[in-house]
Amino acid sequence: MENWVDKVLAIVDWETVLSTSLQILVVLIGLWMATTFVKITLNRLEQRLVKRGQAEGEVPTESAKRAETLVKLLRQATYIALTIVALLVILREVGVEIGPILASAGVLGLAVGFGAQNLVRDVISGFFIILENQVRLGDVAIVNGTGGLVEQINFRTLVLRDLSGTVHVFPNGTINTLSNMTYGWSGYVLDIGVAYKEDVDRVMEVMKQAAAELREDPHFGASIIDDFEVFGVDAFDDSAVVIKGRLKTKPIKQWEVGREYRRRLKQAFDREGIEIPFPHRSIYFGEASKPFLAEVMDNPQASG
Image 1 (cartoon, rainbow, N blue to C red):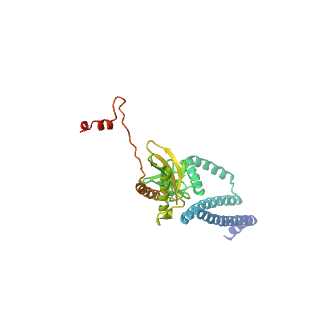
Image 2 (cartoon, rainbow, N blue to C red):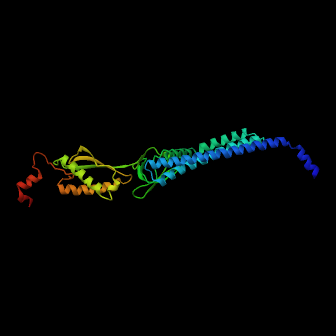
Image 3 (cartoon, rainbow, N blue to C red):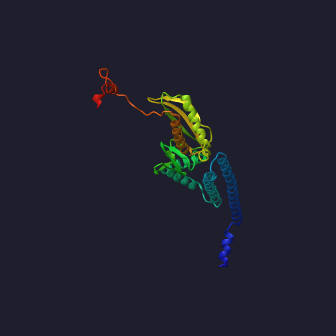
């Protein structure tokens, strides 16, 4: 037994084993240093993203969640890449030919890429949606013409729930248009129609006064971030002069504030005697006959 062990020990090139072991140890130390550096860098990046989100008025929890999601993806991708590189170096040091391994991995990656190209497209698109902060949880957005509240933002899909409660799921790679209605601040645009006989300057003053009273309200005033904007006469409709205005509110508060403003404006118009017209038609039977109302007035017995 001892002779067999001695023969084996004599065959082993201890200088090569020691050299290879030291090289593998250096590779492992390098891997540990690289992963530590990546961890520290990504932690600083996460903190910077959170601070930037808070500076832009983003909810702290949502800002932290978005930054954590991004950093988690980057950390996983970096760790996997570093581990694969270290493993290949170690295999080369122990005498394994890595050329065929790289060729096989390239063919396998090409096959997977063709089969999962839609998935890769969705993930890349989702990454940039989150990175660029295009939309956040709790925003109201219009995606490909469908509007709703953003309930989930994933790397593969974006989920909206509309006013009726219907959930819409969009793969990120298929999003062609994305409109965020609650980014930073929101606006409630009003097209107010009044009768042609009304003094439009007086109407605009009443609109401003109603908005000023609304802003003094302790509940609704906290959601309004600027004075009411009256853009002026916007159109001459069939039965009304249209005056356009806008309320600027905090994100997602525009509908609540706008509905209350319409209620108060209707009451103000009623007090001031300002007419809000409704569509009406006059029926004309031709030159040979009188209008119906004139004929009734000329011959009241016939109407009875």
